[in-house]
Each structure stands twice: as structure tokens, then as C-alpha cells.
Length: 99
Image 1: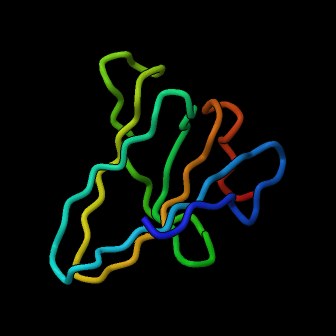
Image 2: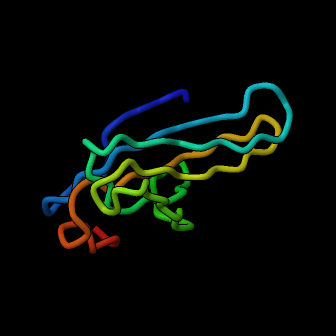
């Protein structure tokens, strides 16, 4: 992980956290990004560097259901950089992706 920051376009009560991650050794890698249950993750997207939402990431929860830890699966190619945007809060408060 290289960067953790607040999203550039947070508005209308939507809170986002942007993560920038990269593969540093030139090989293929599968990573599991774990988000603690104390962070109410509503949804997650791969974004471009301008933080425009792209492909949605599947959120896998622990056995505790919606209140459990969340895991995001990420696949990397050699030296690839990925930007991930996490929407924080309940699904009802973060339904607007357009901003």
C-alpha cells in the first residue's frame, strides 16, 4: 500500500477513502485487503487516478454478516498500480455514485 487519503469529491454526506496499492516485485500477485468491522464499508470500486468509479469490487464478509470484517480480492500484474475507492457508511447513505 502506497497511499491512504480522503476522496477528492466527497459531498452530499458521502464519505470515501482512496487507497493506492502496487505490486513492487514484477510478478503476478493475489492480495486480500481486509477492512475491520469498525469501518462501515458500503461499497468499493477500482478507480482511475482521477478517482472516477470503475469496476465494482465484491465485498466478502466474515460469518458475522453485515457487521463483520470485509475482504476485497485484488489481482495484480507486475508493477501494476491500483486505486481503490471505499464508500464508508450504510448502503442507504452512499447510493449516489455520480456525486
